[in-house]
Amino acid sequence: SWSFWLVEKGWFGTGQRGAIVVGAIWGVLIMLFGAWPGVFLRERADPATAPAVKFWHSLKTAVSNASFRRITLYLLFMAASVSVSSAVQFYTTLFWVAQGDSKLTSLLTGAASTLNIVCGMLSLPLVSWGARRIGKHRMALVSAFVTALGGLLSWWFLTPAHPWLSLAVAPFFGIGITAVYQLYFAMVADVAEEGALRHGVRNEGMYSAISNCMIKALSLIHISEPTRRTPISYAVFCL
Image (cartoon, rainbow, N blue to C red):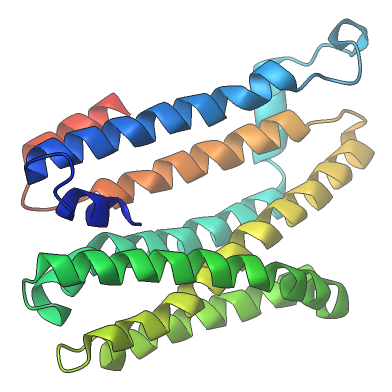
């Protein structure tokens, strides 16, 4: 993201002070936008009229669904691979591509994140069309191939001879990981419908809860940095 660029601009004083301020700004924004749905969204139906479903029964029903386990493993392996590469890409860019130039690194990482987001958003209609055309599971394989292709091209495109060439891999990761999440949640909806037909009980809430817990668990990989074992261990414990 452009967070490192904001820190490097020196608008908030030293690098340490800038990191604290930028982190605080992001924290406030996350809290504001995170509270937005809870404040302004309302359920259509009266929850009191819905049949009560026990938590452990709902969890067992969701976990015992073979289709849900398969697509969750798909999300786990795909998102984990991208998270691992993202966790080390910053250091690769800083110490190899930019040869220790933090100013250049801030520009490269900011531009890469923008390309990642823009290409991912532009690919949404194409992924939807492909899922309708060849099926969600086949489109999921295509998204895995696109992501793997981006990782393979990194071997040649991450080079100090041409630092800006590293941006060429950003669209592959942006399109690939966007397609992964788009198709995953679309398939979760299908699994929820299958479960409702089989058991007669709507279980979307549990499927959604498990999915989001998986995503939060995968986000731990982003803070993995082997040179800071104590703070990283503390952060993992807090999360």
